[in-house]
Length: 90
Image 1 (cartoon, rainbow, N blue to C red):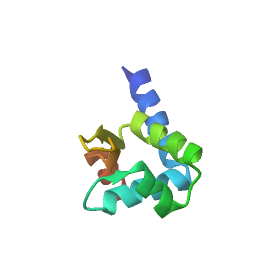
Image 2: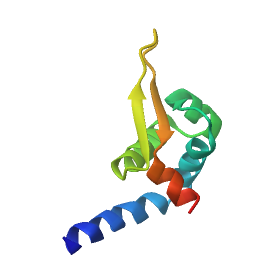
Image 3: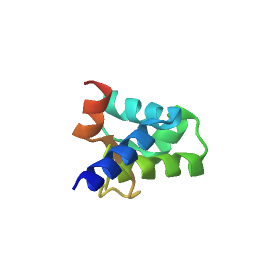
């Protein structure tokens, strides 16, 4: 049990130890509505591959979630989870 907790903490700290991931998380946590990948890319001026990588790390640690909205374009929307908001605003 202690090993699992340590692994979870390691994953969390790894997720928060990158300035681009912190920028993504802050933008999503401070926003009032979820954002699409394209909105994030344009706002943060990040390469799509870089953004995709960082979003996966944040999702894997439970700080960000995404959902596919039923729109004609089928966009995936990203938002900070309660856990993600809590770590930015303790």
